[in-house]
Length: 249
Ligand code: NAD
Image (cartoon, rainbow, N blue to C red; front, top):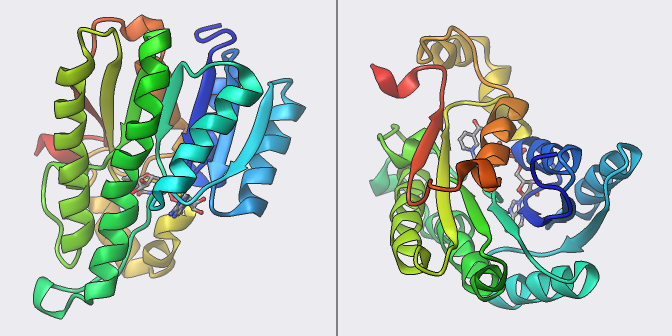
C-alpha cells in the first residue's frame, strides 16, 4: 500500500478526476475526506470507497469560500486526527468567449474557484501538513502551460495554479512539505461532456492528442497517487503532464 493510513483530502471528489483520485487513494490505504459542493456526488464517492473497504467521510465545502476551506481542514483533522495529503482538484470550465466578450461574473467565478480556491485550500492545509511533512497535489491543466481559444479565464487560472504551486513549494520545501501540480489534457469527465456531445468538436479535440484519444480520470489518478506518496520524496515544485503527447508538439 503506497499511502497506508495517510489522511487525505480531495476537493471536487464527487465527480470525474477527483472521484478517481479519491478511489485510488483509498485503494492504496488512504483514509479519504471526500469534499465537494455537490453533496450527492460526494456521497456517491464515499459509498464507492466504503464498498472497497476504505475509510472515508464527506465534508461539503465550496473552495471559493475561505470559511469552507478552513472548516474542511478542521473537520478532516477532527475526524481522522491529522492531515497527510491534499489534492486540490475542484474546478469548473466556465464560459467560452474571447476576452472582449467574456462576462465579468464568469471571469470572477472561474478565477474564484480554479485559482483562489487552490490558494484558500492550501492556506488552511499547510499548517497541518507541516506537522506531518505531508504533500499537496494541485490539479492544473495543459492550459496552465499553453493557451486555448475562447478560454481566457480558465487558461489564466490554470497558469496561476502553476505559479502558486512553484512559489508554495519553495516556501515549504525546508519544512518537508512537497507541492506539485498535474497538467491533464482533455479527459473524459462530465466537465467536457458538452464539448464531446458534438461529434465535430470531439474529433477536433481528439486530433489535438497524438495518442489519438482523450484520457481517462483513472490515468490522471495514477499520477496523483504517485506524486502524493513517499515514492515521490524528492519531487517538489514540479508539474507533470498526463496528456497523450498534447504538449510535445
Ligand atoms: P467534473 O465536473 O467532473 O468534476 C469537478 C467537481 O468539482 C464536481 O464534482 C463539482 O461539483 C466540483 N466543484 C465545482 N465547483 C466547486 C467548488 N466551488 N467547490 C468545491 N467543489 C466544486 O470535472 P473534472 O474534469 O473531473 O475536473 C476536475 C479538475 O480537473 C478541475 O480542476 C479541472 O479544471 C481539471 N481538468 C480537467 C480536464 C478535463 O478535460 N476534464 C482537463 C484538465 C484539467
